[in-house]
Image 1: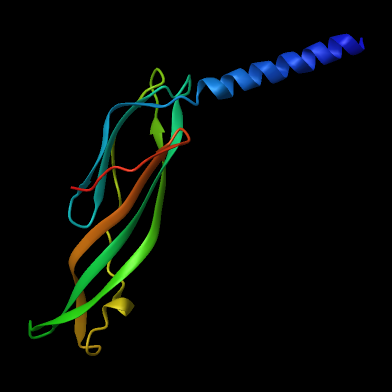
Image 2: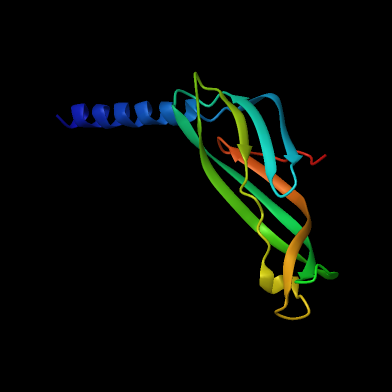
Length: 150
């Protein structure tokens, strides 16, 4: 009886270990690309070797540098402040078909932090002048990709 239980436990361990290992061999079919589309970041991916699953979690991390300007009710524009906002993290689920995930993901639009724009007084409104993205990392299937920004 003890032998049967040990054999059964070993069988379960082997069964679950196989399923986990088979899903850990991601392979890039075409280069992961990133595109700055103004206040958003767009990433395109085509990765196979993800195993027999229907979906998987992906993570996109990035930093931003924001340039602002200030506008008053008369339409006058004054320079605002620039600020860095690091460690943005987007986690999302992507579909997997026959072990392959391919598609496009677009981040939410960057919204200006009024308190960091440092306009002259309450009569001025901060506006977004420019956003620069950096340190982009895309992670899927336990592998990190560092796609270059154009």
